[in-house]
Image 1 (cartoon, rainbow, N blue to C red):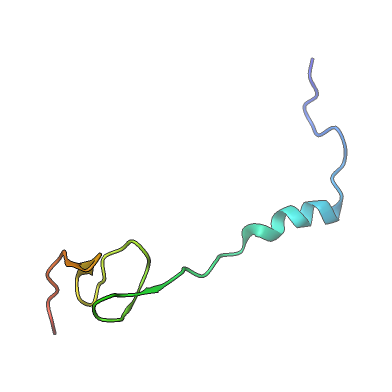
Image 2 (cartoon, one colour):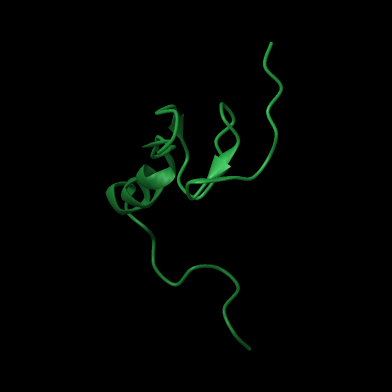
Length: 62
């Protein structure tokens, strides 16, 4: 029969080191090649509707 629980106790330092990597990271942003707005990489620009220097979607101007 195998053991159900952990074999050795995990120290507080080792446990907390493992839990230290749960923070959120800031998303990286790139400038749109057409209008210069900040856009997430590999996404269509919401301001002008372009992707890879091509018009992909029509954007309604308010």
